Length: 350
Image (cartoon, rainbow, N blue to C red; front, side, top):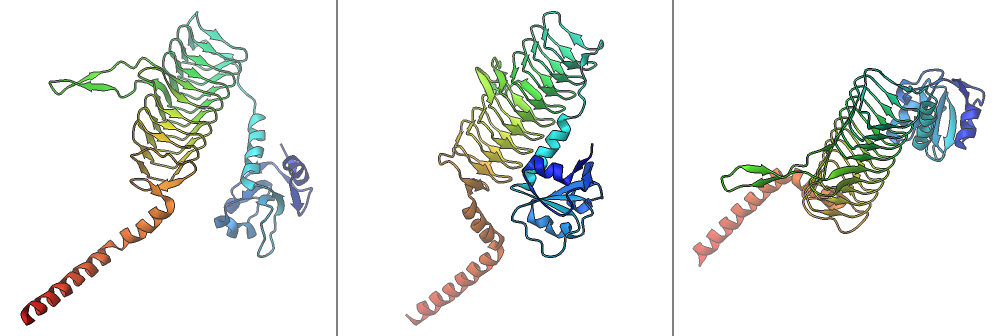
């Protein structure tokens, strides 16, 4: 499909600087822009590329002020990144979607499959499973007994949904993700071994949740591990048993959340964040990369980083001190030596 700059600007509510009739049929990164493609600039670090980019159209924020001539046609919008997301979503939704049930899939006779489903080869659907309308189950997905899947859900290849777990509407689970595996529950015994505690609960994913590849959400010991509406989870994330993740929270890769911790709404967890168990994290909390969280966060809308988690400005000041510790140590040793020399002189005089 081809679109003119004018059509794109009308769709986004943007303002054109350049040729309104120029056409694009694809997307490109700004540093790799080619004729016939649309790119965008939202991060100032990439501003240098806009002057030499060959992209036909570039989305920019309305406050963008070029330092010299730009060859591309610009479309000025309120938020270039969000506008790009709107365009990508429009193009993605226009792609043809597969439907139909492969004869190589296994579907138990008690399962209920909604209209317009796509079920690929080697999918397993167990007893009393319910699958909503417009669901896509790619190859080697497994829905164990009693699992419920809402409408407009995509499970990519190799997704495993354990028994009695529930997935809401408009969710996307990427390859290798596991929903409902046992929580890490073991009781120590007198002989030093560990006895497994049966994990009798389930996992509930509410609507509009996305989970990245090879991420795991463990089932609750009792009750539910709950991922609320709008949560976005990256690849390689571990959510332990009985965790609750608040609405519209986002969690980046290699993060681990220990059992029974409650995350508030609209939190942001950067990569490799580790959160201890049985904590409460206030709404709007932001944890920077590699933050360790041993205690609850009671004040909302803070940005924290480091271990233990500190307010971000305190962390930055502490980082400067840490970097200078070798020199500070030399200074302290030197001062100690001088003090000792002074004390020795005073002692000799007295």
